[in-house]
Image 1 (tube, one colour):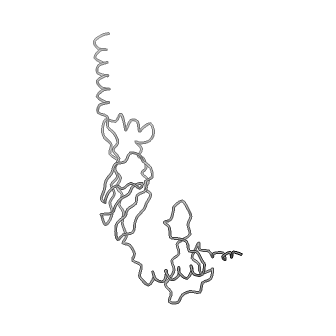
Image 2: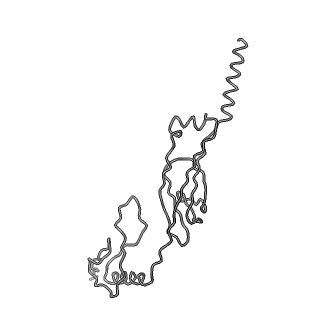
Image 3: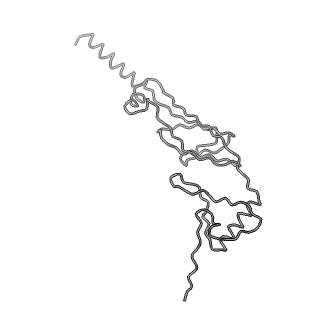
Length: 187
């Protein structure tokens, strides 16, 4: 083995070791801000902190982001983090393991929170009277549950305040309500 080949092999070995020792990586970070600040952030049902907040993440994809703050309507939103071109299969190997510098992928999410609506006492009493009258007449009123995006749900019942109690007929039932069958008498 001649001297030139010996030096070339050592140079190649040293270059490979140096390349492996100084490899970069991809740093993924999300910054979540709200207006007004101070909302508690949940990402995929895990508490993250109080806005403004930053967190790193490992995988791209869809995340559920939920924000809660006293005096404001809660916000729940699905947000999709799409992979950039250097995170596509095959290219990803080189950007994660071979590329000698760090790559930063920062996603900024801004949310506007709306103040919670205060229901006037008259409207609240009118709704309570409507429910009481329906129950006494034997009608079932469905519970207000948070909508599930995968299920097609009819709009929620929103009665208008009335001065006199309404006459109860099946057509006055809220959407999804139905009349109970007559009770069976024991003989």
